[in-house]
Length: 90
Image 1 (cartoon, one colour):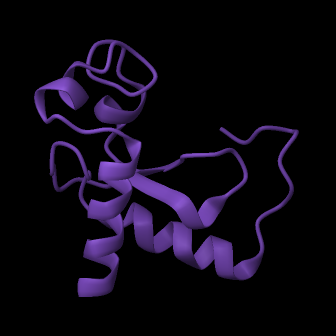
Image 2 (image 1 turned 90 degrees about the vertical axis):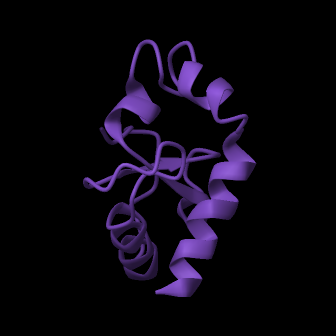
């Protein structure tokens, strides 16, 4: 979903987000296609690779009860570190 309050992404931001979305989830490590979660709205270079459940799930998700996050003992910065490490390893 794209917020009408956000500026349009620049080409470098789009390319970065596509690379992030190609990674497995940074929390549960599921291999299916991920979504790009922005830690701060509009700052695409701090996007985190998350599966739909770890991102938007009502129980496990960041925007829900965060149970998977608690089990894995992670916060957004931990997930960003995993995402960045995987990007640099590509």
